[in-house]
Length: 403
Ligand code: SF4
Image (cartoon, rainbow, N blue to C red; front, side, top):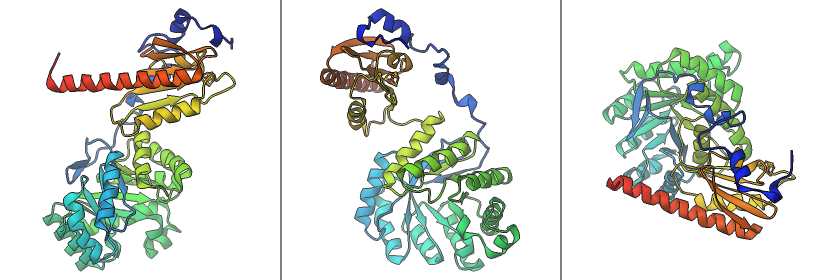
C-alpha cells in the first residue's frame, strides 16, 4: 500500500474516509445488524424486583458479589460498584443465618434486585425472602427433601420471588450420571427439568433455569436441548471460566454463540476477577452482537509498521477518560492516516496519527490537523471534552424539550 501519511491532503483523505453512513466492501461490516441473529426463543417472563427477565425483555446483565455477605457494608459497597459497571441483578451467597440476617440491610439499601444463592438449607431460603431477597437461586434436589421444597415454593410464592433452578455439571444426580454415562448435556437437561417439576408440583412456575459447565461445547449443547424443551427463561453462562483473559474468551464464545442462536434471557460472565469486570465483559458481548449497548465503543487499530502515534498510550488515556460514561457513541483511535480514518469513518469522533501531522475527525469530517505526537494527544483530549460537553447539552435540551 502506498505511504501517503506524510503528505496527507484533506480532500484526498476525505475521499478515502467516505461520508457517514456509507458502506463499501470493508464497511459492509457496519451494516451487519440484528437481522443476522437467529430470532429470540420465546420464553415466559419473570420479574426479579423491577427487572423483567424473559419474554421480550432485554437480556439482563447479572453478577455475583464475592464479599462476605455477613459484612453488609462491604457487600453494599461492591453492589454499588457493580451497578456503576452496568450490572442489573446481583446475586449474593447466603451460607448461614448471619448472612441471611444481613440481607435485611443489604436488600433495603441495594440499588439492584438481590438474588439469594442458597444450598442445602430451606430455612435460609425462607429467611432470605423474609429479609428482602427478590429471588432465589437453589437446587431443589439438595434443599432437604420434598417437604422442604414445598416450604421454599410456598415462601417464594408469597413473596412473588422467582427461583432459579441452577444445575452445574458437577451437581448431576447419581442416577442420571449413571444413566447418561456422565454429566452429559442430556443429563444436565433432565436434572434441570426434574428440579423444575419439583417446584411445579406446588403450583410454582416463576422459574428460571441455568445449566452450567466449564466446557463451552457442553454448555452450548445443553442450553440448545433445554431451549427446545422448556419455555422457562434461561440464565446463561459458562461456569468457572477462568481468569480475566481466558474467562473472557470462553464466556464470549459460549454466551455469544447462545445469544446468536436466540437463546438466553439473562447472563452472567463468570471470571476469576473483580465482579465489575464480569459486567463490563457482559456488555461487550451484548454490544458485539448488536443486542444492547452501554457506554462508548472504543475502536483502536492493532498498530503496524505504519503506526505514527503512541497508540497504546492514547487508547489508554481515552479509555480512562471514558470510564463510567454510559452514553453510547463510537470513538476511533487509529495509527495512521493511510487506512485509519477510512476504517473508522463511522466513528462519532476519532483521531489518526500522521508522520508530520495527525488529524482529528468527527463523523467522517476532518475537524483539526495537529503537528507533533504530544500535541495530537492533547488536542484530541480537548476535542473529546468538547464532544462530551455537546452531547451532555443536547441530552439536557432534549430532556427539557428545548428545540
Ligand atoms: S490504521 Fe493502524 S494498523 Fe491500520 S495501517 Fe494504519 S497504523 Fe497500521
